[in-house]
Figure 1 (cartoon, rainbow, N blue to C red):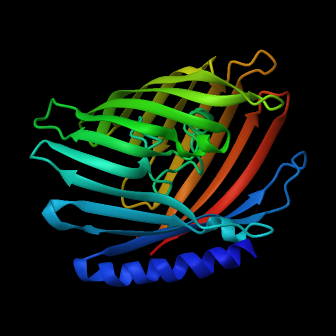
Figure 2: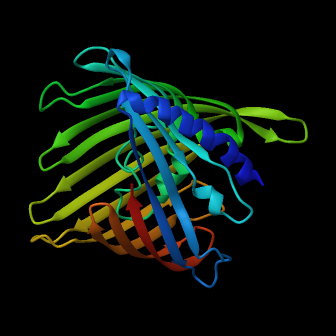
Length: 327
């Protein structure tokens, strides 16, 4: 019932808006990811076929050189019992001059590489555990000042203030975060940089009396990507800071190989680790191995095996295959 109500409300509004925006050179795009999971028998999972992401986006220009993006995700509608349509992006970017612009609205936090990278382009099916725990949902509402590089040695700069990660609102009464990020371009489309986020989260700590407390979330990250002429790419990120006052750290190292000669295959291996700082758990660690075949310019097939320790004494192995198509 919830899914049907969401569709009846959201789709007519969306289609009406897109019809009006179409006059202003609106570009419609999106992608869907249909995944089949061979779950470990020790896991209580029965939803083998799953639409992991079903995205529809509209982008275009507004007056005064401004641009906008609106993106929705329909993936929850196939979940048992139904779900809702999720707003993923809704923001405007306004250039101020040749170097500076301002972005306001709901968008991905500009932190490192994997948080910002689209899931349609990433080879591993999901982000590292550190990114998923520190930046749940990857998105936040706020305002950013952005400075584009004015020379080959200058970095791209983001400085912003936000309401914190959007999914924090599920458990927090309020949050405010400050973000800064520097990113330098390297040869062969490589990159390197540093990012920092500091947030104070006011959270309920005693449901019986409604007491609240302020908790520190601060993350410092370094990232780098280096692409070699032989088709080998090496990428890694390290995170350290606090999550609800607990000291945390995590990292991943990713190696990708795309053979020369027009071969449509890309092979990848990633190791990631995350320590949540809780004395009752150990660090989460995972090995991920897979291959991606580009079936066409708008279709790709991914097969992935992962083996992980969940930090609570559990050890699991899973295999997944995913068909992605763009539109």
